[in-house]
Length: 622
Image (cartoon, rainbow, N blue to C red; front, side, top):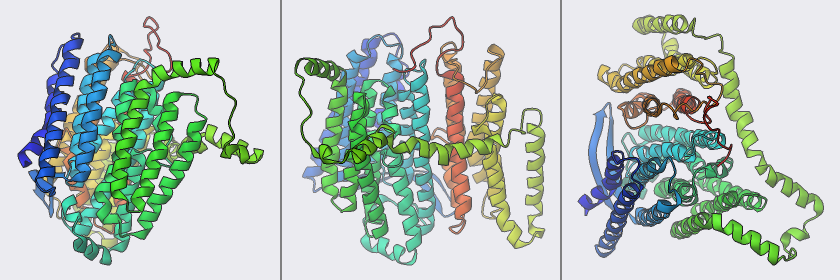
């Protein structure tokens, strides 16, 4: 049975790789291949469920290959199967099969027909890796795949303004969730001194023993897990991204934001519940956030003019109720609730185009006055206040913009003195000064040596903010993002236990991605001299190969799991001591904001309406 689990996890990824080589203009072959591969996977998932139910329902834990081992850490792929995985895998397989069948006709003659199906297969690969994961590291690989496929599917109509803009917004919120996962992995490493698996978390005595002496550390890990779950499941205060994600095609909205991806936050809480269920503070926070999200989502959904937005906020409200169930310890109820909500929202989204016309006709011919309900008993002042708050979506977008994104942008704008003429002088001079301090640090007082790594990471973070706010020169943005990684290496090099091979492991992926990015930027600059980051320019229309290469370069530089840098980031964090919380926060923030800045560069250069007026300009929205 263990070998069967491995095949189930690998099957969607194999289908994705093969789909890349299918001819672009053969719609029947492309959709038929995806339909067949996902159909086979559905049969395999159901077979595994029957075998597991008839064999005693014991947990299955499979330790796969070890990708890196050293410095008291072991980064290995681990697979786990229990009732949570069983429910998520069956629901995921059935809904993906349903949506694939629906998409074969729905997307007929779309220019991105092949792109849609191989992105769905890539998403399904990440989804299976996440739900079958046996530790946080394996889950994070699937988590990252879901993040980038979300961006690609929301921006499916990549020649239109709003889909691209909203895709960028969705990716930005997802990266906030990545901060939670990264810091939770770092803190867990110091709490357990091991790559803890979800199977070990089921050992109540082991968890209680570690939390007795490190209760604050346990609360920190629980809050980071909750942050990641809220961002992924669109819970308060991150709820406003979900209706924006509906700019993608209806099938991708159904599979992503109605059923599977939006419930990954619930999955994360279900998978880690043996850790946080004994922490009253964590349970209260989960229940409180769920209550606020349910109330806000229900009221906002009532005033939406778009049917897809109504469904999105209805889903947010139901997931808020699932959070409440989890906080009360009703884990089996939460699983049933997840399955019901996923099937209902998928159905609603798939029939939404037809439902609109039916409802308009029904309203026209069978008008009925408003019935008495609880809202009619409110005073007019309260009713109007709730209405205005719901119309403004409780100002969640404005709050995030004012207290999160604008400060980052303003900080980057203060560094505008770093331009292309002095960039290399400033960065290289300061970096060589840092290298000199590293060589001479044995002669410096210990308290200075302790604060220097934080200063160097902060310098790298400032360079990331400069790239995040860059408008004119694309080479300034790219170079500052590359230099951030070298400042990180310099900061961690003050740790005596850091080996040269670990540095090479981390920096190898950075160097290759940086070189590929420079090649694409020089090439696009020679072809289009006025390329900048002021607006979306849509160059993927004329240069699709360059667009693909630059996306690969951006993902490599961001530490996406296609280069050793993804594991290298975990190695770097393993060298940060448990009392260096600020250093860990700066480092994780730098990784996250750099990922947002990289996707912003890709979107601004290659996506959106084309700058050349002889190309057709699409509508703002899909």
